[in-house]
Image (cartoon, rainbow, N blue to C red; front, top):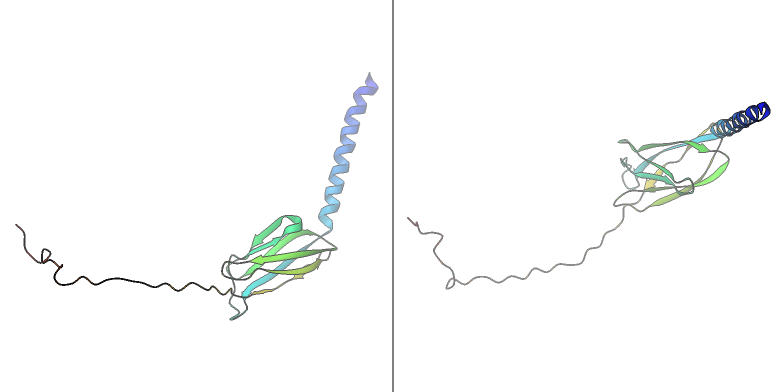
Length: 140
């Protein structure tokens, strides 16, 4: 009976220690991706662009200066970093993240060309015979 009372708590403690050690190990093998998102035609920073790593299901947005940071990315792997911004073509760059290093990735996005259809406005003019002077008379 005493043996059973000591066995289950000991197993629970070992299980918790094993999980925390794996978590600590995973945190130590990470890197960071940082960069700037800008317009390719004039170099202007693109604020609030979407930056995304699909394989990790993680993302961020660039700040007002076009700068972005993705931290705690598992290291020694290739990632496809994708940036999208309204009115610009989406761009993907493949990078490898090194342990305890900052990987620099700068994105220059190309504006998309939007072609609209021609609109023709057709109207007819009201002839003087159909016009009324009601708007000009003073009504009491």
